Length: 251
Length: 251
DNA sequence: CGGGTGGTTGAATGAAATCAACTATGGTGG
DNA sequence: CCACCATAGTTGATTTCATTCAACCACCCG
Image (cartoon, rainbow over all chains, first blue to last red; front, side, top):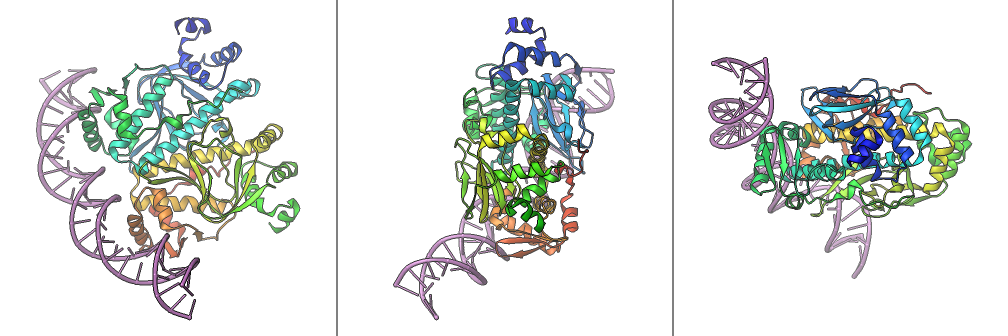
């Protein structure tokens, strides 16, 4: 992993490379051209909007370090977090053709974000088929995550819902080479979690209390630690099929 | 509209053409090659699965007549409808590269469905850029719909949630040239609606009763009629921006 | 030291599920 | 043709779950 970072000269894009490699076989050329695009990166504080609903789409964001989320605000000020973005995640490739964003994107933690101009990405897609296939894959996974979220919100109890979300984040982190074998740390507050699962902060707190009593979680200030992923997965009834890690076959 | 159906020889693809034309300027050649692909269509009864979660992805489905939905089943048998598909809608272009479907698709009414082999669609995308742009657009709209659903499920009251869904379907139907000016008919039962909004059928019934009392809806057997869309939109706090009908500009 | 944010707990209120009964309808088979 | 059944819709009573309101703690940071 270390040697890779030296090899490609841009240590911070490791997560992205790691992720795309899971989806399609990438040549050195593919990776080099990808790294070339990530040169323009900035460090941003937590709770910083990258783009807001109603704005014209900007460059493509790639999360290199830290966490971000997609969210919407309702007229009464309530927030619904739609999806979490962790290192290696990026926003839609084709939103550039739309007039307006239909949601906002913000950092959740201090984060390092790359900004890639749309034309450059489009040139990349056109010129490198295996990269473009890897990109499709990530978009399909993002769609699967949205669908799974809808199922959770509609038909799971609050305990299952919280457990399911944390399971998902756990597996996504692992797929990116982040976190330990049996545990990992989610760097966000219970308020953020509440906005993601559609509950109030106080009820989210009570749900977490129950998961902690079941020895599935541990808590730190501003973070949640998964202590026992198999227990959590059992509570959630978690099936990771929608993350599409089992590949059909490279081709 | 009638002359068009004669012109292209395949009256049933009108909805699809109408929809894609809203997204990008299509030449006669574009439309002709699209129609050529829709020759293989079948009439199916209501509640018929087109494909099930866990199956290998099959051909691309295009709804020509009737309604369908994407859904997932939970271990306890509960169903969550994830998205509605009306004439002109079709499933993801690229799911072919995945090993398994992460959700099922079924008809809700008797329906006419076209089955397009994946290779043919891919050839079409590669050969006709403006069609491929129109396809992107539809995928982005589908994504926006999923995100709006998550917001509804998480942060809207049950009355707002039902009203919001019906508003969305109303505007989508209108965009496809279906339905009247101020009203339109949703051909599904309250049970289906309940599975879409994540409530029980009895509570869905009570919600509908309230919307009917507010003179926003009328009821028929196995169908719901929108009587007053502006009243419904006011109740829902509906903003159609996520359907992306305002185009950036053809290019 | 003071103030803000995040976390925690209790008590009261409100929303939705559950359980149960009953109606209306359409289709089937005798 | 009618008796029967299955399904969809409706309503009421009760229980469960989540929100609201309120108070308080712990901590970090200026």
